[in-house]
Image (cartoon, rainbow, N blue to C red; front, top):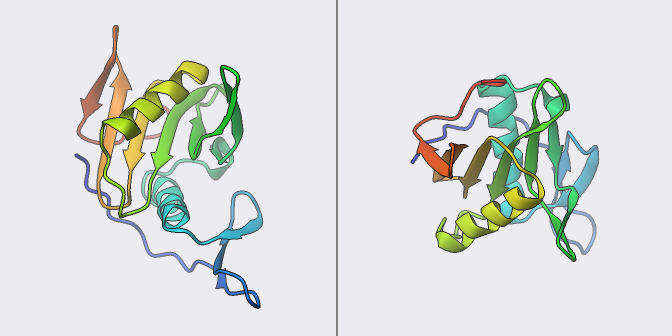
Length: 147
């Protein structure tokens, strides 16, 4: 397991009249509902940008993808310098365990969008895997951008 120490960031949060709290997503340039999962996603994005020095322009947030006949949405996808999918990040709320269901979800997404790295996080725990010859192997630290 990788321990993540999130950097401080002044998130913009608002509570529209009679609605749930919203947070400004700097990458998507829009207000989104502030769920526990969204809180993890926004903090993880800041970790990638501020701590790991990933370029923000190489990170896609919650985009649709086709998984067989189903339309699904990945949480975060980091592209490499040649604009190819490189790292897929599955975010869960802090109350969600990173169990085999989460692992299988990420592996299914990887079938539709093959990547070199898979990352699972619930904000407190973080597991990262690197694609080997036959399967994914857990790694002790997140790679630097482009590794």
